[in-house]
Structure formats: structure tokens, C-alpha cells
Length: 65
Image 1 (cartoon, rainbow, N blue to C red):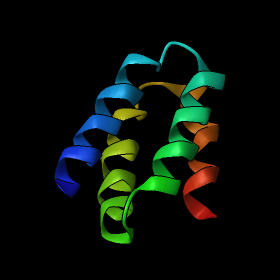
Image 2: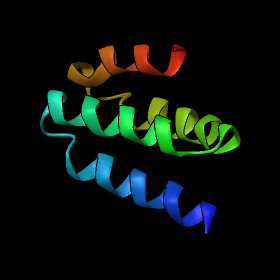
Image 3: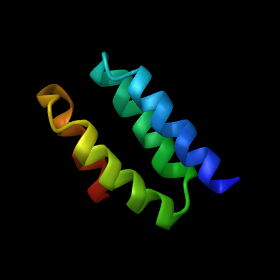
């Protein structure tokens, strides 16, 4: 079940990546709901996902909190 939530949030983040504000909101929500080991996996995925999306780079700050 836990893996399903991680995949769900990845899908949501992909779908809202057109809007930085919405992306940030969903990322914060994902971080608050996922387990620590899932957050680590999300961090890795996120770094790869936003690699070619400079407008989303500032959202990495939420992963350091």
C-alpha cells in the first residue's frame, strides 16, 4: 500500500508540473504524507524529473526541510 502512495504522488506531481505553485503545494503534501524511506525515493525521482525543468528547481528547497 505504501508504494502505491508514492506512485500516486509521482503521478500527481507529473500532472501538475505545468504550474510551479500547484507543484509546490502537491510536493509539500506528499512530503507530509509519505514515510521517511519513501521521501528519500521521492527526492531521487524528483531530482531526475526536474532536471530539464528549470522553473521547478526552486522546489528542491522543500526536500531539505
